[in-house]
Length: 303
Image 1 (spheres, helix red, strand yellow):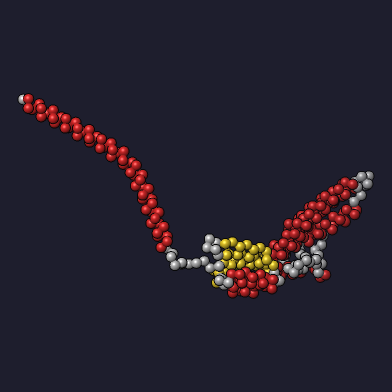
Image 2 (cartoon, rainbow, N blue to C red):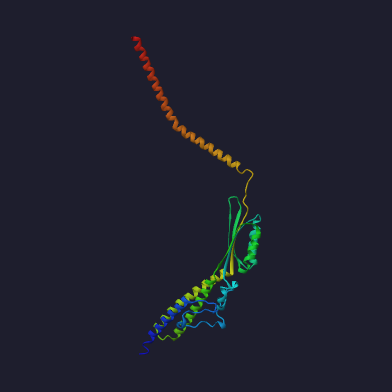
């Protein structure tokens, strides 16, 4: 009888582990009293909080830090996670030199060019837009050097604080790894095919979430580690040329003259038939009056 109840026992155990972990992940909190990740589940939490005295797992990358740093992240400015971005528009006569200098500044600070595009205006002037990625520590000096390459027409910079998002992703990843560890323990104790299938299904779900969360954390870390500076370099456009306005005036006058001639031709086309009809009508009226007058004169003479 005990052997028949083993599949049901494993199924119930898997469900309980899943529910309790979901509750822990939804209720995780951070306090200044505990430098590590604490759980609000109380005595019902299936796993104890990690031992922060021995340190905790760290994510690969310069922005990663142990869970012992989380408690200070909200109060210590140096521990905050900020994504820095800037946009600068520069006008310069030394266009080629400025473009080359932007690339040199980027590589000089250990950065890289993310994208670059160039277009030619109607006046034959070049405009190049370069998106450069530099380490966050080099953001301010790199931006200062870029602004010396010409006349700054536009400048905008901002910082996006993602400290909370960074901490949340780290905590979620830790919980998922704990859940994976417990499921692996259950898998080692599984005695039937049904138990193995159920645990395998849960393991697949947890590992997918681990991969997705790790990818999000790595992407966020990359955006924090490397700041973005978008530089638009423009050759100066000609403001006034020697014949500016005169040619335009002559062109407008010529167009107006041709337009007027066209209007007169159209008007003449309408007026000629009308004048012709009026002339014919007047001629007929004149003849009728002349004939009537002659008849009247003959009639008077007979009397």
